[in-house]
Length: 253
Image (cartoon, rainbow, N blue to C red; front, side):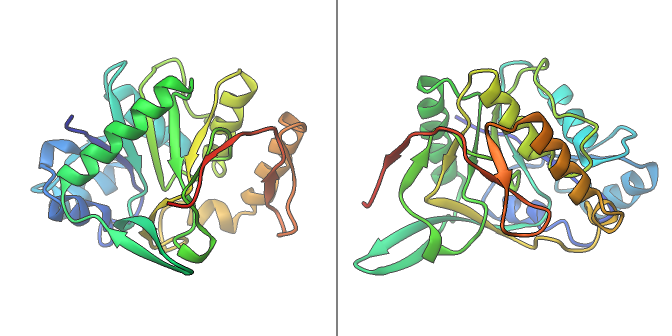
């Protein structure tokens, strides 16, 4: 099937790489929906990307609210892909003996077929959302699928449900929170470990202000208080790790 993409973006009118990436793969302007959260951004994005994407605007104070603007925009039941605004390529890890390399998708037909398979897999496993491996490093990746794991929202597949939204109290780690909440409610939260996207993480704009204000530490503490049976503190400062029960399927190709 044909897919649409929802992209929350803030202060990146000059570096929203996801838009030209999707256009180069053959997706239309109508398939690329960018949500901005200030009037100033709306004007700048319209000038920079109005010919290549559908720009929508609703006032918001953080990325969670901006993500929910997209959930409200797409109809209930539509399967769509939510992406960060700095994606440069979609990758599949491939193994050649002991060597691992990336295959980069070159057209929308390939991606649409892949998304079809992932949504079908998740429908059978009671997972209304799915994510890919969070770090574009083939060395650490595998052909496995975690039925339950924490999401990093660089890319998330969503079977839209207007009653399932991001917690707007979380100006950071809102992706962690929604995946943990799904698991606590009895759903799976599938992560495909053989796929990733290459993106400019931590670049200017986006959630930069929240990180500078120390929100990362606060949100991690809140997550640990809410989901003590699913996560524990990570060895990395102000981060968490998943310790809940999961099942891993798949393996070496």
